[in-house]
Length: 421
Image (cartoon, rainbow, N blue to C red; front, side, top):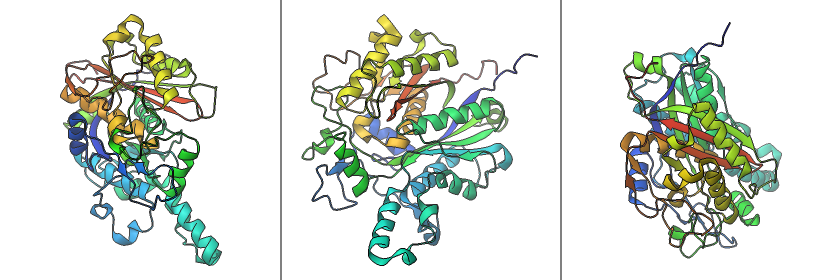
């Protein structure tokens, strides 16, 4: 007997918490305006730190969704996850508790978990002793408590777990949720990524690796993907959550559809702990896997939301990989890095950027790459420098690559009601 046809997967709701907006509408408007969310760190004293800038989330109030007593039992990354999830559900016009709990899953990835809780607990242990640790310490910091708390709050009783794959985490969550729905294991999945690592340990750790920009005196220009003067990424925080549904379920309730998820590719560089393969081999294979999964020719892609972190090695490797996959057609692609505005949201980045692709498809506008003043001659593509563009985007690809050589590519498509389901 042949394998049953896979169900189509659509995006019906988006919730974003980023350094350029505490909801999807504000974040999207900021992206189109080319507004940077990078500034001096305010969450801790940076006096002795070599890096004093980051993409912080401001004006976010978790008490909109969580009681004050319960909020104290959760790390900041869980607050972000709940806020983005609730906004995504509202955007999708899904009630809470969810209408079909046994067919609703929660798949939210976290790159590093509760660093702030770890640091605070370590100080209590050192200065006050083990008996003074909170019984909520571990539930506050464990990665899977992001989807766990969302599951508890929404009543979703389907699959509930948290992928961890460094900076590819959020994209992995979207891809795995897509497969879950394709295969009939859920009708709806609340899916994405969250991160809150603007802490002394988080920032100092990345700085010790020489991964971060040290453009402390000019923070809004610090994230400059594909520019010859780039000197590292800018750490950021936030969350991106999308509501994924089977097409049949979405149609049955008359849901608004942003886009369709049609391709999911994965690969490993098998090369280095932190550096990408210099020729972008893993990224190349990953994009090819996503194209094969979507049954597409490379020439059908119009827009790529690049991983584009603003690191010297990463931007060149990704550009080389794109040229390898797309050949002569690569010069016709529109490629941009929204990290130039948001900074690098680490475990949340892939989910936020997949959501950006969905918004790009829905609205026919491509966010720019800002701070691209002097394009690196080794990066030879059209990076939509400076100003947003308008155009019909039928297929968009989003790249997410992480430490350890883990790579994920997602492909989104314009949804057309007249197509056969």
